[in-house]
Amino acid sequence: MRLLLLPLVLFTSLASAQSWCPPGATWTFGYNDVLGGVIGHARVDYTADTLLAGLPAQRLEVRVNAYSYPTQSYWTEYYFDTHFTSGTNDVVQIWNASEQEFDTLYWFNAVPGDRWSVPWSYGTVADFIVLDTLSTTIDGLDLRQVVVGLDVPSPQPIDTLTERLGFRTTFINAVSQFILDQPISGLRCYQDNDIQWNNPTWSFGCASILSVHNQRSADPSQLHPNPGTTHFTLSLQPGPHTISLFDATGRMVLEQRTAEERPVIGTERLPSGMYTVRVVNRNGTVHHHQWIKS
Image (tube, rainbow, N blue to C red; front, side, top):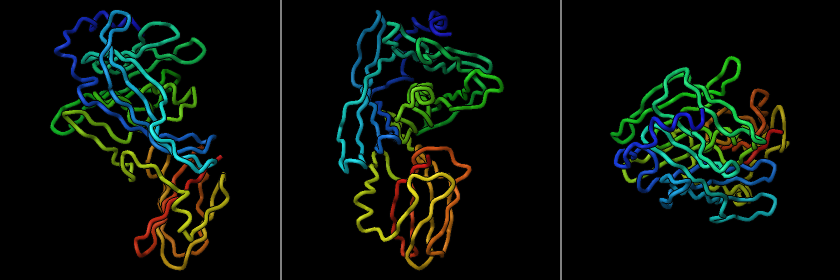
């Protein structure tokens, strides 16, 4: 629905425009470049107010901290991208540089059945369809939620929008995650001057960079094949171990306890991508591996 929504909300007073980009707004996402062998996090900071196409807008700067397996080196505060948004309590827009206009990004007062258009690829657009509306409370603040899917036959939920937080399992613009192979995904943490939210499925801290290179030097366990497809095998020291597998968003997708020294972990049902394998022995010592399913 792109700009057709805007006349209803565009002239809402700035005093009420507090649900998007309040002071101190910061998002921390996962960063996983499978083909490049890079893993880390992306931090998105609301850095300034500006005017764009005559509208009050917010500047969001994206920077990446990551570890490269091929070069065995860290990227620290590597500049990645800048987004410009313009938001009210009900609608958030994102600047489309190629079209030189704003597109509707989030619609927080939508109801089931509502649709809005988002940039797709090569100048085309796609539609989000609202499947359900919910609410949540974070640090005493009541926030609206919108469950959305792509408007295709028999749409399935792809994400849940939450006021202030935006998308949870994908990046700011969800379509870019699916169409453009965007390496930024999975909201780990959000904070502003009023609230702080941590993804309960992410176990390593908001800004964690899993330095598997350093950990492997003291790690007696081995993992192969890597990359793999239907399974991987671990070579472990004698004794019980707990093996956990996390996807790119930090969600645990598999957990297995074993006393075998060469357990085979089946991964037939998992989609392709980069995974973190956590191995905990009976003494509580933790080792991590990165495993790629091709």
